[in-house]
Image (cartoon, rainbow, N blue to C red; front, side, top):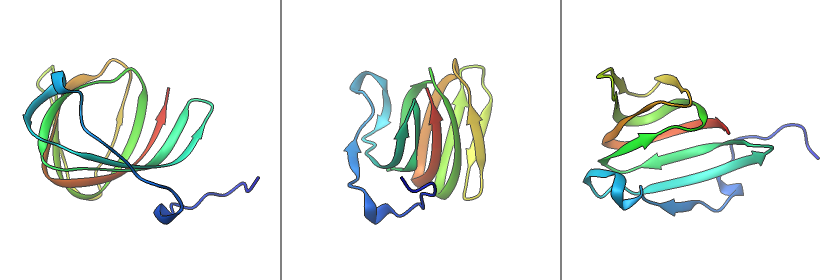
Length: 113
């Protein structure tokens, strides 16, 4: 097994999806996910979403880095995080709120269950 994995999106078939219907707040957001690594409860790859808003409920830990676009995360406590290229966040288990994509957004991510 190779001990180094580059972020070569051409090496994986992207998965298409949407938020669960009961979580959509506005619009008709669509997701494309290139999951490059999946091992022992860890996932890493690239995710892209089109405009819209939906409720998020984190049971996992996620680090991400915004590559392009513009999104806003608003926590249920009212805290607002505007996400533009270069933004980085860690969302911890228990975080709840709204993810709103204002311009198609792409991020790379690492998720730990």
